[in-house]
Length: 456
Image (cartoon, rainbow, N blue to C red; front, side, top):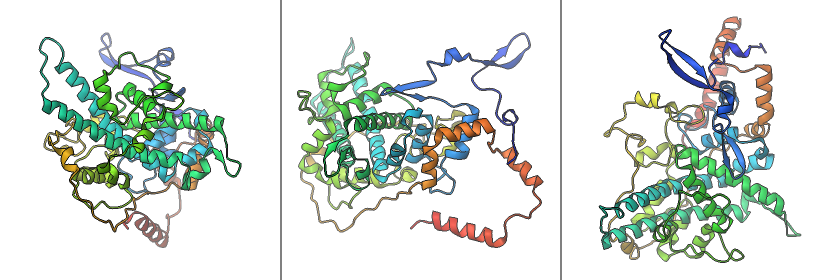
């Protein structure tokens, strides 16, 4: 393979900013010193340092070796797998293990991460609502709350509990160690001895990884609130390792956000809030536990709404006018590590009347009917005859093995300068004497791709 020196295709502007030189009357690039970037280059999550950015060479390596292939379904939009790829590439070396990589590329974990993103999409809206209401009812121009306002808050709290219940179902599937999770279970079969140290390390790694996935999916905003709620959901408040002085909810606000099922007990008998949700499921919320497993047949509009948001693929969320972070957004308005490219957004001409991805519009809570939850108790439920099978495209074993050797791959391409860019490809095309693939090869490749991408 032809050796191409790095400086021929990697931009020379790595870190810095463009400034105006008054003396020369031109724009010049000003490098930023490495010492100033140390504190900004990493974000610490559960004791692991995840990179915030990549240089140009690492970006080229990611795009060539680790980015999702164009031959996969919906390659032009952002899916959960794209976010997982970015987090894995930015993750520290100590969490890149074979078991963890195989664990992440399972259908169970994919469903869990998607339910987690949906939950935090609603949770952050609720936090914003709480902070706005706090400002409205305090100060010199405080407003008086009516009984209808309190009833709306109770309905919002119940809606958040329902999303938490769906997340708890996916979480319980993982910790029970059944099905494809059996090989990752911490209790050794037959002897029933728990591998506590290994399980703790595995759990901390997965918690850090999940936090990063949610943070990137939420446009890299409100990291403190995401991190705090992740700790509470999966550890309970007894084991809160990190506290934020500026986040302090009152008792009424905490009851609204955490729901009526959350009970704080002695740390010896404390269960995580997700398990507490499963232990106290209201009768009208029981059909929610079957969402994604079988088609709901009944008159409860709330269950129909949640089912629609959950079973519709990420690439088709615009058809139901729903937003789950950056899921389903076109890749052309994002950069390689899924930061929004506002210059590209500007050329899409989004407006109040044309905004399919809710970028121009601010995602907000819809005001429910005042008797929405009361009517649910009188809903009818009929026998179901249809099972739902969600579409999931498994990652090939070759890609998984490449992720297991991530550091070796990055080191090899960095040292050998073997990155292939568009200039290199054009040069090789000009030097090649052959006529290219035969008609039969082109036809076979087309039929193979059509078979892969065709809807079943």
